Image (cartoon, rainbow, N blue to C red; front, side, top):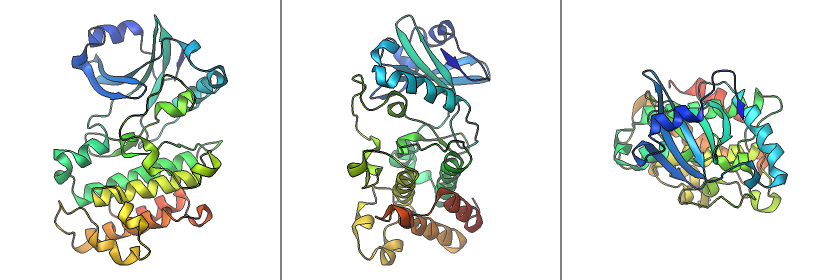
Length: 290
């Protein structure tokens, strides 16, 4: 049992609030388990991820200590653009993680669902900016620096004001060798930096690359493969924007084009040529009105 300073959530509270994990309270499914919305009081809700693991003995021994260390580190993180992790508990044959509940869910669902057309250019710029600030905090304000390593639109949640809230995926916590993990559609692999295949180890520059892919995806409304594969991508910038939205004009057009250009800079093939997330966050703050 590991909890941060804010509060503890007991197994009994969760069972009562979800009527023993009834499907009506399930708000998401993934390779490691299910996520439930748990209303603790009239004004506080949390998201509970019930893992497909009965107890810590199901976690490979090599990962067990790192799992505890990861939880302790992540419960100490406090940033407006990062989803709060309250803690972890293993009890009665159930392992669960407790996060702050983020109202609008994943940005992927909103971007590709019916709400995609309602996600205007200004909102998209703000999402990218908030995402950048979250990574800049992890890379430059945490000691030691934290590499996320599993970035995708699924891990960028949106609150009621459409502000980005980066969350940490379970593979980072349990490690890649956990037998209870099942690869599911929409995993983070499509954003991975090319050097991952050789090094098999994530770095801050890998996070930068993934940020670039996601930033481009938000602006394009689809995977940016065509732009990344083009040798003349600078000339394509204004032709690849999400066609579901009217073409931007004026100030917002400049901001959107800048986001695309910064996304391309972040996806350079040579890791050392990519900017830092601190630089990216500062530039987005200076060049946009989000």
